[in-house]
Image 1 (cartoon, rainbow, N blue to C red):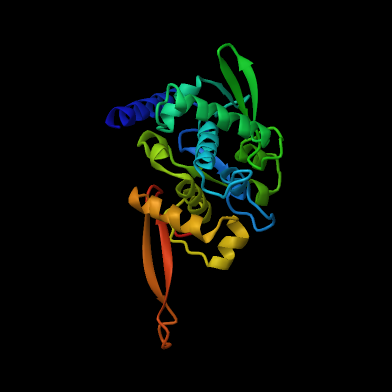
Image 2: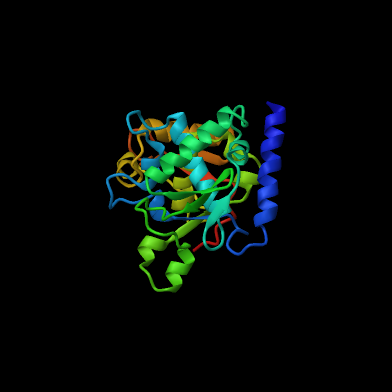
Length: 261
């Protein structure tokens, strides 16, 4: 296990070194907020990626698919927003078991699922596949970085974005996150607007805006807490009444302190 973790960290840091000088990657992977939080749709793109076709959300397949897609956005930082790397690299990056064989098969399966769901395009390139990322909305549209869309005057509500910090990869967290944990990290990053703000959400708002179940939310928060990626504070609500109600306040640790805006 220790050797596999060291391989994962080495892969992540090598990729980070290769990408570090490229525009758009210095602060982490840019993700449109509507990927994770969108009350206007019945299921967010995040929820669609996490969910199996015939199995409940949070399955291992959904975990690999979600973590791989976010990692591809992290890696594809300049036009034409593509990458050609062996599947073993992605298996090592995600810290999958037996990365040379079983891990490769899981990555290839996840890539084909991502293509079928219109999040990427695959083309043969020698012994590997050229992976071109497509829109985070999963509609098959060409990818455009959110800041470029904003500069062109495209709707702000569809192009507001947050960043997944580089440390998620370079500190090895991407290999320790499960599907619910990755989902909740993205949701909390989206809600905190890229700063270390305290956020909370009601069950009804979560169901409406995030499209993930209460069980997935609970499992995800527990995964994040176990990794030290989020703090959870319970505060009293309506303390003047006889009912002892509390509210959970969440704060992502990796983000910079809030600027008070």
